[in-house]
Image (cartoon, rainbow, N blue to C red):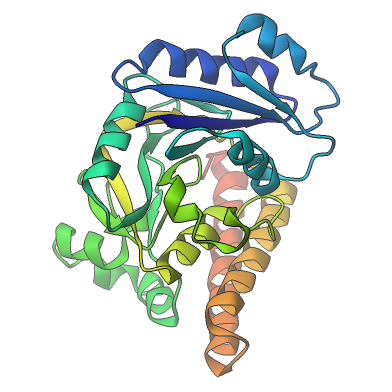
Length: 294
């Protein structure tokens, strides 16, 4: 068993170096290779990575084709039977790769696996999720009722922010910041590669759904933890821009799953109203208390 760890860099030399160093330091119980894809970084010299880490495989993209395309360039040269897509802004603090690969090998029904992710301050990132649906959006609006349910029942029903990330579980989709899958699973996809329709954001949900179409499940592994920096801006203008992008991607994924039927139109209405209301509540709290809301 060989794990091909694929890291995409774009103008984040120092952060990417920290990621690579953590992989080398903590990965002890499984053979692995590190493939670094530089997405035509204008401010980084990709050869500097080879000076610092001569054992890695460096792939130089001629363009910044986005996260999916960058990872596909790495997959093309990967020798491993297990692929790990690892964000450049992640840091390992234990042998998470060996633990995750061991679990994946025990579960042939799993197509995509991710682990417990935390922010640098130790707070949990909600990365085990359900696919969006009209039912779940309505239940999310009725949050006080959900909070009356026993924790385990509520968590299993909704995942996401209702789940404390404290036990292993199947999910509809998991985070692409640490996304592990078998090469043979990807080989069943058209072109034997990841879907590149999204430049950045939303790919993990799309890929997990496409693995689901092949008959596989997604799995969240709470047994190991990885730090994911993931600094989201709290500035109102940037928050609104991100929200609009988020809504666009969610609607494109729903259209992929369901088509543009009546269900899709109702979903658009409910999701947009809910998320815009949530956005303005966050902005009011931010302006009044300068409290960062993720």
